[in-house]
Image (cartoon, rainbow, N blue to C red; front, top):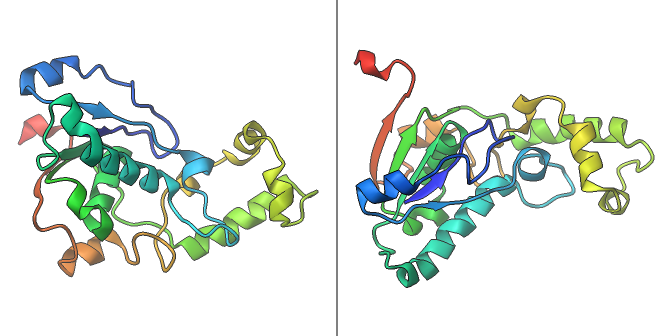
Length: 204
């Protein structure tokens, strides 16, 4: 079972929870990972080719499990991907990203969301303006930005966590909104899926 932590795509870590009880009760191997967050994971720019680095990190972790879990006594054909909040939203993304489909066999969505993202093009323009205002000395020079300290980027650019979510579009892993892809049937139909919301779930 591979766990994706929540935190609004800007916070959280692999050791937020102690997985020993879950491992003992379920008699399974629990893998928890870190993935790039905030400006390091979800800050698209025109000059940067890839989008949603955090999702790519998660996919790489799934690939690692496929290649190595047998060494820990695990079964690579029985991998569950699960997460809460942003981790649940990321699990939804991997249900829609075709290159992830062969890397797991089931998924659990816990208080997942959102089901709608800004386009990468929208975010690129906003991020570029924010970058130029925060670091006017670089004037859109990518080599200049590469010389800056990462902690300075974090300090100046982490101003609105909503803008640091994943994006969709031509250069994204998701070309369309998640709901549109689900309605078209363009998701991993071979995976067993369970979903729910944590708040007030006892009312049902």
